[in-house]
Amino acid sequence: MNIALALSPLLVVALGALLLMLAEAFSPRQGGLALGAATVLFVGAAVAGGVWMYGIERLPEAASLAPWLLLDRFGLFFDMLLCLGGGLAALLAGGYLVEHGIERGEFYVLILFATLGAMILASSGDAVTLFLGLETMSLGAYAMTAFRRASPRAAEGALKYFLLGSFAAAILIYGFALLYGATGHTDLAGIGATAATARTPLLVVGAVLVIVGVAFKVSAVPFHAWTPDAYEGAPTPATTFMAVAVKAGAFALLLRVLLIALGDASWTSWAAGWPPVVATLAVLTMTVANLIAGRQESVKRMLAYSSIAHAGYALVGVTALMRDPTQAGASVLFYLLSYTVSTAGAFGALILCGSHGREAVSYEDLSGLGRRHPAAALAFSLFLLSLAGIPPTAGFFGKWFVFKAAIDGGLYWLAILGFVNSVIGAYYYLRVMVYMYMREPAAGAPVALPMRSGYVTAALLVSALFVLALGLVPTRAIEVAVRAATLGAG
Amino acid sequence: MQSPWLSVLSFLVVSTLVGLGMIGAGRVLRVRARHDSPLKVRPYECGEEPTGPAWMQFHPRYYLVALVFVLFDVEAVFLLPWGVVQRELGPAGVGAALVFVAVLMLGWLYAVRKEALKWQ
Image 1 (cartoon, each protein chain N blue to C red):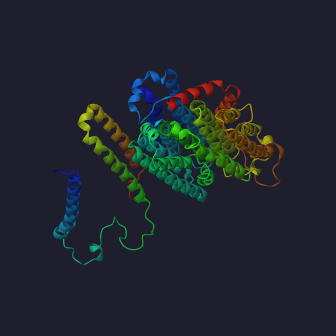
Image 2 (image 1 turned 135 degrees about the vertical axis):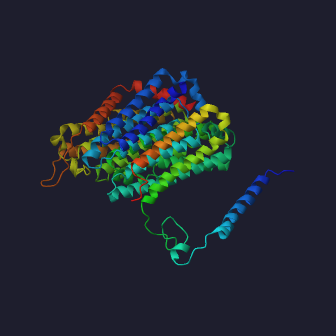
Image 3 (image 1 turned 60 degrees about the vertical axis):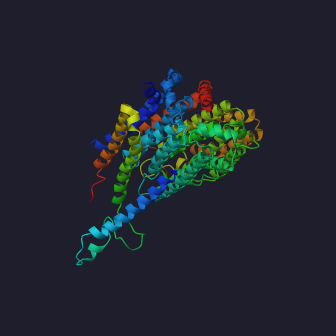
């Protein structure tokens, strides 16, 4: 029974997904599934929170599932984070899909199954379960990207996403096959134990391939080519889900691999380990994505590049794992939380700014919004400020902790590059606000009209609450992140 | 005396014999088609033209059927190792396998309800 309690966040989402799938197929009434999906996911987050407070350590039977599933505080943190992100995406879908006439129940079922996959991915400590989780998550995301079937853009984005995602999965599993060949283990702890003692070329090639595979999934430059097209072609709630849950799941995988399989001192040294590789990815990702994002004419595409840039900031924290796994790990977890609520909010605000027939896409679509729809403009501004990292929002402390972890780890230059990049990033976030408050739409030009939806409003309220709460009193959340990261390192 | 590779050799021998045996049995046991229609001597390929260029459009129904097929194909793949150690797992193992099959049956139910198996 205790195992069921330890597994309860996964079980809630799995059962909810199956029930919703049947309800969608057998219910004569169409629609109304958004509420069901969001409820299941928020209940999943609450249950994970309950297990967290009860104390997963008091359920020793949970360890019997190791190494396949590591039911620890690290996994529970991601359960909460992923359910929150998935739930917000489901709420946004409830408004968006109906408004744009592509409401089909499958979308919500896909969100639930993909979230479940991400949760399994975040809890897995073995290459087999890890791959199962990764594919469950990715297949759902591919299908959601292609959801607008008649649109060539959606088809293009989905095909690119599917092909490159499959390549990434193949590279990842090839890396794990080499690691298995070199160590005789498929579980991360076993790989780590052997990797600590003997380093063979096979082991190094395997580790590099695994890191490359994960870099594809978190869309780090130079493995980001699929991201803008997939994010732009997908329905905006699917974009939200990919930017939020899929990215967080991939970061959970990266942290587990680097901490457990490659966590030995010989691998975390700057001279002979992975830190220079991750640092290079971080610098490239931040710089390239920020420079391109500033040149975008579509706000949705700008937000896609912004989500790539944010993966770069998080990678700064990942690099800092080399010195202090707990503090740096906690900074990455907190960053992912602040990024999740800010990004879900920003995409939600963008959804709210468009209505049937015309989505808000370009900067011009948002011009004069401060006058036409003050509430939407205010919400959008809040999330953009958070993404730019301006206090008193969640994004400020997210960046603060990540850069602080880099400085504490002696990576001054990395922290400075991150800071310079967030200044560059502020340009294109503020540009949206300039359009909303200081420009008027050109006379006679068609503009997107804001929609009305209780679902979208609810999602924006929840996101805004988190953004402000984390920005004003981050102490509680950072404590939680530290506890999650402590056990993840164990 | 007994090399560990003996089982591999015997596997190769048996699989070759089975393969050749099937082709040979087909020659012996086949019903002699009357050659009144060219269709009767064509190899059967699920209703598609068996020869010609491979770049052609398939009916999307094939994908649905293939997907449902994969569902049960993979189910069998996973049930086989379960069956090998089934005795040691005991009643809990049977319960777990039943849950596994039940979840897949839900997928099948969904496919049936969505008329994925109807050939229109």
